[in-house]
Image 1 (cartoon, rainbow, N blue to C red):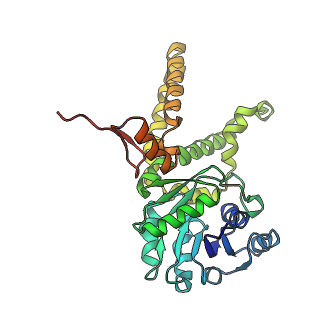
Image 2 (cartoon, rainbow, N blue to C red):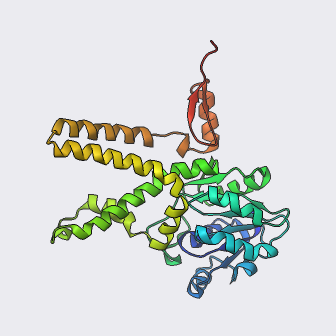
Image 3 (cartoon, one colour):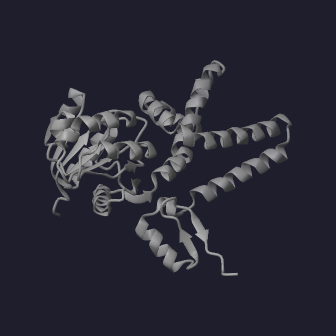
Length: 320
């Protein structure tokens, strides 16, 4: 297969950035893969694995690249882009792997020289582990990757092709809609896990001897990188308000029923929670590719429309 790009640059060689480089090399997406990292160990690791052809600082890696992938923490991306912007080719494309999109969509395009396009991305794949030693070429296989509307159709098409070539399922989102939705599906679960883990400091002695699979499943993400997640949660603080308030209210209701020794109300509450989970996680356009969304609109309900910017369904009302 002919490479999609002659040269790509991955700026930041941690878990996700390292996996981007590994997957790009594995799938033959680019003739040359350049990497940049502040860590010499990460650079050497990527070279030893043959995931990159060359390493250097951000400016050196981005020089002449057709596609630049920012894989640094979100709050560092603007500074990194300012640093490497003078080295960008006049028709280069810049994308990223940031977990928050509205902030980047507002900031990064204004830092680019004329002719260079920014198209936001968020591969919904990762691990509670950190560092390039945990990177994998198959990290993005069959995982959704959000690509945001850039107003640059050709650049957007090439970024979508890039992620599909790495094995991901591309899902289009408006940056603000993305932030609202991941606040519920990714960021709030992490907050709850962190909160529970912190509360374990008050657990009775000997509790650690009684942990099972449920405990391990729930607390795994509480082992996530503190620096990374403090960056993500504060960057998406506005969108997090609604889900955190909703969870607090739900826990208050359940706590009242338990305290009242009302087993029937507790059972109804849990049944309602199970139903809500089923509705929230059933197969919907949130988790399907754009091609699948268009196909389902044509074959299932001709009056059903899907807002491709938010993923929400709505049914046309008949003319009155």
